[in-house]
Image 1 (cartoon, one colour):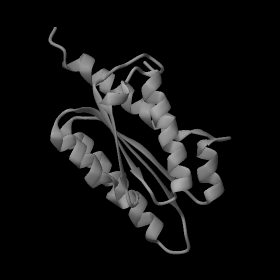
Image 2: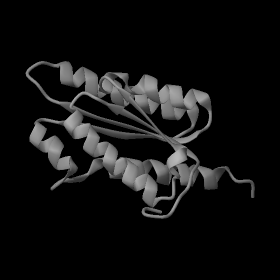
Image 3: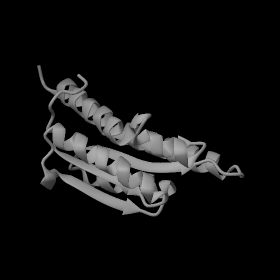
Length: 153
């Protein structure tokens, strides 16, 4: 189903300001994907938050409203000299996964977890791909699959 046109309804994007040079690039990729898939600008809502840690609560706010077909979370957590990275990356992932299972709405994981800023830049539209676009595409594909699966036969 990858690459198929899709207008799933409203799409929420939660994006972290921490490492904003990276997350702005991830956001550009996610927005480009949504446009390519037929999501109207009026159906796209973007909310910025401080960091990756806050992404699950923003994603939950989209889901609790009940009018979003998909949510994409974007952030960049870069390893430092302390275990802080492990807590932030792991708990953010857990929070987002829990939400998509609880609400039955796809929540895309576009949170980079890299050892260096160079790795993050490479994955945010550089030599290693466009993970913002990829996260949005996977999320929209899941929304389309759920929509097909939920149709009465």
